[in-house]
Image 1 (spheres, helix red, strand yellow):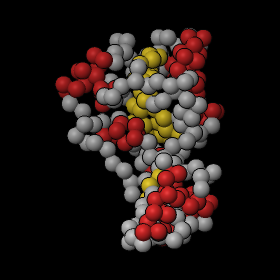
Image 2 (cartoon, rainbow, N blue to C red; image 1 turned 45 degrees about the vertical axis):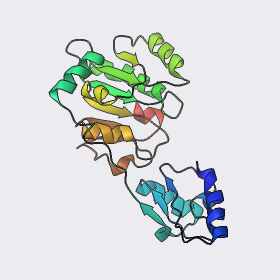
Image 3 (cartoon, rainbow, N blue to C red; image 1 turned 90 degrees about the vertical axis):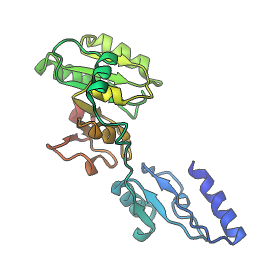
Image 4 (cartoon, helix red, strand yellow; image 1 turned 60 degrees about the vertical axis):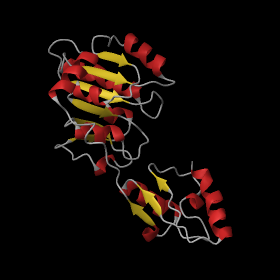
Length: 231
């Protein structure tokens, strides 16, 4: 983690090395130590994966603009490219009721930052306009059981399926029409990049770098990261 940066900087300084230390960060965390991004006494550059993160670091920590460079991350196009064979396998692994449409997927850890509870509330609204809509939730985490109970209490069993964590998310995308993201904290979400590689639309909160990759009305739709807007 970032806590090793001061130690690394001290080693470089005391050894008189010409090493350039490059801390890399995805999300912006306002209570982090500014010295993690710009250690004193050595040559360094900070790399961020979104323009949003760079802007936040520069403005909040008063770090010079030229010290921070944006380097967008990519995704594994070879792995995340649809094929007839993989699509058939994806539909087999993640089936939906006949004639389901649209089929959404959400892949992520179950915790309060991911806001799966808001997603379930949105499903309750969307199913009234689209009775055959369906959602695959994929992941694991501390709020998983609470989300299962919430879905049951809301009577969403015929519209929502809880799936276990997978190391092969490409098959999840094969079974979907669109990818959902309702997070309140993100950097540049891999799940959106992977979904785009699989030619899936995105519905996402405006958080971190999502406005930098979601083209409103063309590749997806954005909303504010509050409960009312998401629903």
